[in-house]
Structures are given as structure tokens and as C-alpha cells.
Image (cartoon, rainbow, N blue to C red; front, side, top):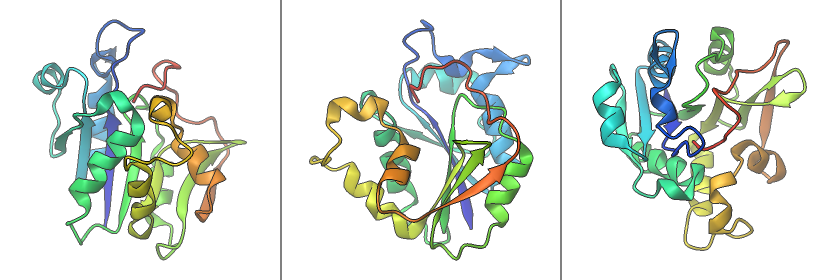
Length: 198
């Protein structure tokens, strides 16, 4: 069974207010992402951090679990760790599919292809939009420990100061982790803006 994880803990410093609440198509940005993920996953989780109380008041989370990343200032690595800790004891979950909280335009066919791909948990699946890799990313349980090790006190080549700019896809591609690229002949999902703060 797959579970969807939405990474939405960033502080949106350039916007001056939580990006998650920005109105898109008459709804908060994050709510659009939650709606899409909920339509494809029985189990889904939203990782919040900055201004989480305000966001919780204004967003409909439907059936999604809400996790609070107390260390959100470390960046995306700490949000991934928060999700992994939550799902570690839920043995019915075989794969986590990570979405970004500012990308509501993920096409249905991408999610369906990730869900239906039969890789037998042997590889991480990353969509390739023409020549660029992007989200959502499917990570089978056997690879979770690799990510957990990255989040310990000794992060190896990744300094704590670099966590905020940590690129999950670059890490997977450059490490010894086995990946499978799923090719799509269209432009990838558009970020609400270019700031990678989730």
C-alpha cells in the first residue's frame, strides 16, 4: 500500500505570509495539493512547520494526517524525517510518495503511473518531464533507512546549514541508490514560485 506525503513546512520568507495559504483558483494553494493527493491515496499526511497553527485553522485537510515538524528551519530533510518516523510502525505501508506543498499542478497520469508501476520495491521512482527530473517521488520502504541516516547528527557530506537547500532528487541521483525514471512528454508541475522552501 502506498501513502502520500505532502511537504509543506517552509517559512515562505519572500512572500511575507505562509505560501500554503496563497489563493489559487479560489482555494488555498496547499488545499489544492491535499485534494489531489487524497483522491489517490487512502493514507496521506501533510507535514507542517512554520505558522502551523494558522494554517491548520484555514485549510481543509480532509482525511490527511497532520504532522508538525518542530525542526522545520533545517529544511526539507527534517520534514522527510518527520514523515518517516510516523510511517515506520505502519507496516501496511510499502511506499511513500513525496509531494511538494506548492505544486498543485501534478497531472493525474503521473500519480497513476507511480501507483501502478511494478518495481517490486527495488528502485526509487522519479518522474522525468522531458529532460528534467521532478516530483512526486516514490520511495519504497527498503530505502527509508538511507534517508534516516542522512538526518542524524552527523549528516556526512551535507552540513546542517545546507539542509534548507537540500535537493532530494539530486541526492538520489548522485548516491548509490537505485532509481527508475518515468518519462512524460510534457512540462513538469509548476511551483507557486521559484523559492524551494518546503
